[in-house]
Image 1 (spheres, rainbow, N blue to C red):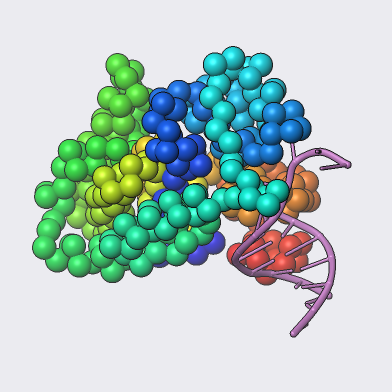
Image 2 (image 1 turned 90 degrees about the vertical axis):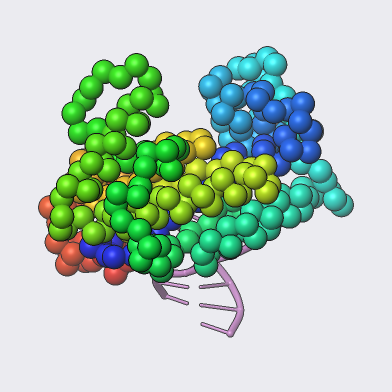
Length: 293
DNA sequence: AATCGGCACACT
DNA sequence: TAGTGTGCC
């Protein structure tokens, strides 16, 4: 994995996207435990998207709707429409285009799936840095941002958001006082600023909420995005990677969620991604292709 | 027959 | 180049 890059990469992921689309069509479903299911006949249909309220009851993707109702009696079930016997995803594809259009005003985007897109913010960040400095960045501009690895001291905070804010303040403080090697971190922070604005624009124009990760490459951005969902974004600086990796199961890294991940784990006898640092690139290449760099 | 089916990709 | 396997949503 290419670390040590100057790039700023973001991954934006719509929160339970199909559910949000159905909730926009039928506002009664908003703020309720809710799923989207397809094909009614077998056990009530298979669930393909789950609201966070429903997740709290243990409902998950790939469950049968009938089984989910047992976990969550007041579950709302929206149905995917069918056309000639097949599930018709057109409404979600159209909603996806709406989102992409708004995001494209901020940077060149790379669509990764119906509900995910990567963006290279390197250029936008450089431009922005010409008219501003660290002191111009305030916590108010980063109101949904987490900075992974901060606060560094484990403090008892009154709420989750109080802790987030404490971490953010610590991060900004460190950024303005440490002169040199923090250039990359400053770039990530400006990237986070842009992503805050972009996500606000997406919600304003489409009504849809999303989460995001901001880091130096696609794998790290994707990982960061998953750390604080829904409706939040996470900056993952290089300095916070070792601690995060030391307890991160291999399968959490994109593309290692299946057989490859299991074989890495079994062949090398390790649990966490961080454990891989003890092997040389040559060692990894002789076991697996030239894909694991 | 029952966790769909489509898409992207790596490899051969 | 086409066909297969994998991974993800």
